[in-house]
Image (tube, rainbow, N blue to C red; front, side, top):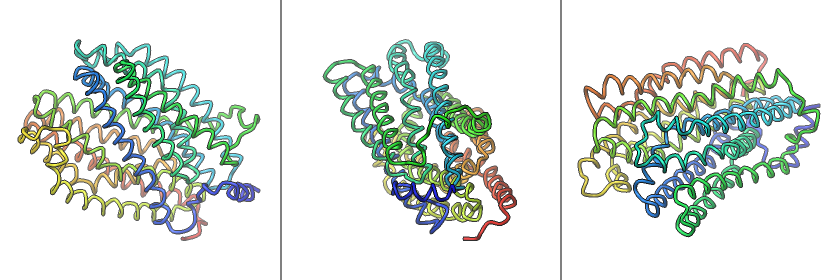
Length: 464
């Protein structure tokens, strides 16, 4: 009955991809590549956005916007995480061919997203000033920071709309469509940045309004596309009736995934505070290196997002054998890229740093290159962090994945409190690598245990 419904829907929606059958490597590559280009474009947009604010509004405005980065990542990251978590039960129901359950999970995710949209928006907007003061935001940039982040926080409903709709589309195996809307949103954002700032002279408020509006447009388009092209996700009145069982399951997966971003943000804030004490050169080197690292890490991020959907669908289908195989093949892809990453940093590390640093700052450029080499040298461990953690989340064990985030926070905090005061900047360069190693020590056996539990649960699984 459910299988028949799924097949009918697939005929009407060619974008739906069943990742429970066929070549695991092909599914992983086909799903990861669009996500990679989406993440890459997103980082490019972020850089252009920064340049526009700095050029047209000034250095204090740029510093004000930049000072909100950690708290923005903490709150917006939480929204991104819970939406990704809400999509996992949908992916599992899709893999299990349980269309009734799929619709129910989707409907309950709408109610939960509405709740978080109202609650988070009111809470963080009310306490925005207190948060900025607690972060010791300097008086000369405080107003810029407040004007910018307040508007971004007021746009939390738009953030949730896009992340929920794009997450649901990806849970059904379509990673391309969300990227199209992300690119459209980013281009619209750049145009609106230029218009509101350069033409209307709105300052940082213009950048914030551009971000919120473009994300709202992307979220609306994603939602319309989703309902028009995915029949299996169209819900009726009975599907919207509250279900404690489905809500409980969504919360137990979504909230830990959201908190994972928050925990990571806390570790980054602690480390940044420690680096700030080392002076201008250390701050400049880590800032430049961190911006480049965001580009460098996009393949790892795309592999992680891929494994969440892949593991979710195959858990629903009772195929732990495919999850194990998918983990192995996704990790091999990441290992191959990490070797390439090391070579790129050795040869082009100086040139990449020049995108953000003046050529005369030879000492800072050398420090930035060392930062990048330290990161790249541990790319093997970052591969495991992303593939294993997201696979564990896809299997439904978000609590375990969150513990890995705590391990990362411990690693960064240990470097900040113990190593940086003694060894200075070069110790800070190994904060992220140490965090990845500690997370891997936990994640590898945790993933093995999760797969073993699923294998016992689905003892009659058919081998690939």
